[in-house]
Image (tube, rainbow, N blue to C red; front, side, top):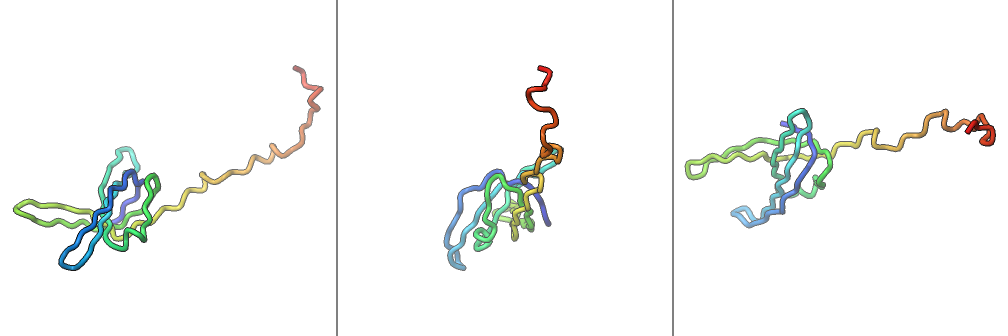
Length: 115
């Protein structure tokens, strides 16, 4: 699955040691655009954290899988991101040159102005 949105919060890095060795996990919150905005918490694991280089306020395309597991009769669901790619900034944010008429010389001398 894929989802696009702006990262609004990066939660503290979590680390620990399990039966397979040391692990690290980074949770982050993405807000989706649209008439009804939604907030989704994603988790990145291991080396994918360093590869993604997450920054709050930037737009990302998140590829993820949903996974549920049962513990003591209760079910828990996690959105595990397996790829997070920064979206290119739109060309509208780049500097736009002035219109052509702004480069033309002044036709009327300043001392001939009516005011």
